[in-house]
Length: 272
Length: 178
Image 1 (cartoon, chains in turn yellow, purple):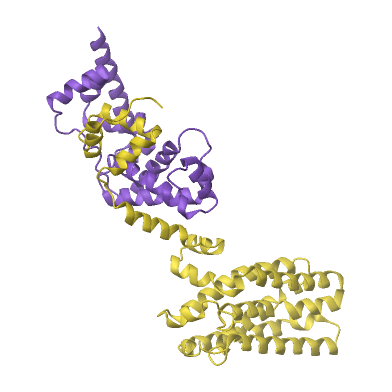
Image 2: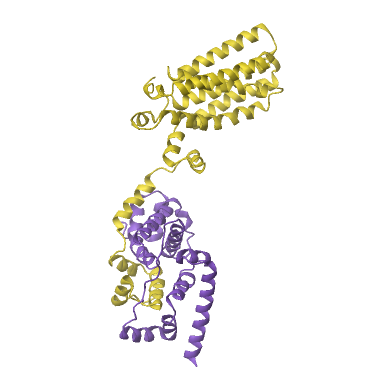
């Protein structure tokens, strides 16, 4: 630090912008390294409302940074408030994802090594994972943002569909990934049943709570698999073209019902 | 006590998420940064936004300061670039460099020539456009591209004006010394 400091006159002209370029430049160079002179400039008439900007700055830094998923959704073109609504779904919690991945991993490994019985296990688990995940993404019982959502004038249909799409975008690759270790056509045969079940859960949630309908659908599916497995050793039954077409019709019909009854979604929100 | 802590100590505390230190750092630097930014951009709201962006960036990445040089200079580097990136968004219009549009008073002229000699006078004779470019590129250390955004002129204009300003200064100084 040199002994030279801004004199009061130059300081005043600097703040008022009546100085010359050379004066301004040397004043600015000096200010970068001289705390006392900076304090004197701060004391001069401010050009902005420093206190107000502080409040804004503090507000900004105290808001938690959006999660990775939320930022991805924003990049995908969703407005910030919708990204927050979608990302808050409980299905996106780390614990939930880890649980789903573990179940799938067991089923996939069993199918890869356990031949017919493992294959049954995979066929039993893979199709119901998406509908359980979807149901948990908007079931009031699991929804941490349920109360804010209840009082927000936001279309329930849009919220449910957005979350369904986001959740499926996350869950399907997981199931597909574990499906890769499963030999034969079974690796992809679960896709249509899974789609059908998701649609059924969406439609059923206009009557009962989503989680209950997902549990009911899962139980029914497990029972069917159990019966099929007891009767024959060939998992191919679910893979037949006729069965697959049935699931497709189930999916389409359920989705139609869901769309027709969509207005019931909001009234049914306080369920659970 | 915050007033006794150095900028470096405050910044270390900010890295530890100390809101009090962050506030102290803000109060120490927001004022002069805003005054200096306002000399580049007449829009006070944009200056306020740039100050906010600057300190949000400091809070998020206090480790961006490598420990070399003054924290004030580091902050200025962030602030001017935040201002430039605010200008990049549509609607951000900068009217730049109102300084000394009016002719300086006679006694200021004398003072200036005493204090800064030939270079000061040579600079004073530059056109406002050339001074703006000199200020952005030479004094603020911006790249030609950033200067073009700040001044709202094409990149090529920044380059030609800078070239002409340098030639002008060189000629003026050579003339003065001979």
